[in-house]
Image (cartoon, one colour):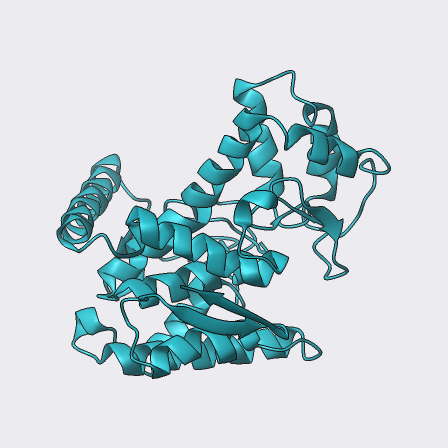
Length: 303
């Protein structure tokens, strides 16, 4: 993930036109105190709310199950990883990037692995914690205290000089490669595809959500994926709400492009302008090959 965020949302309940968040009471986004006039909620009211949320989830599950496979189809999922890798790693051979690790100078600390897990944005820490639960003797476990300390910053304190070499060594272990893929799917791919299907989007729209979630993070702050989606909804309706798919995606890409350039004016927005927007203008809503695109000055083609 290429940005610092306040909250990762790997499995947040959603409906077609909105996203509901439950923030911990000690979160920076939670109210500091309940309004004086608000009466305490009863256990019965809490149970009723939980039951309604579960019913919403079940209805959403039924909607998603009724949609075509789209980006979740094996061939399309492979294509999605190739497209993301072209922007994250300047290659379409994403399986060569498990061992990638460097500080890109973007304020996120070390960026590593197939999706760009970062020491400063919580996702790398979560990956190593979950991996260590099943493989306690792995070569990265000793860095967990340092990873917890630097989470949310660009610091290398406690990581240098050995962390990059430890990551590269662990990336040769099949179980760690599988863990990277599982965490990519859990945090980024599956939530993005699910929400896109609830919004009535086809394969291209599902990829648009996925790439945005990777780059901006599945966060609730102003520059996170969910905030970008809310801003796009102010400009156009989703297909699920009766809007045009092309018009909605165009609005979403406009919002995303603005956010990218606002955060990093020195960087280009080619992963939108000469990749996703190109596919959209060609009417390729099913993301069919062959595909030709450009990212950060490099040209790519898939037959």
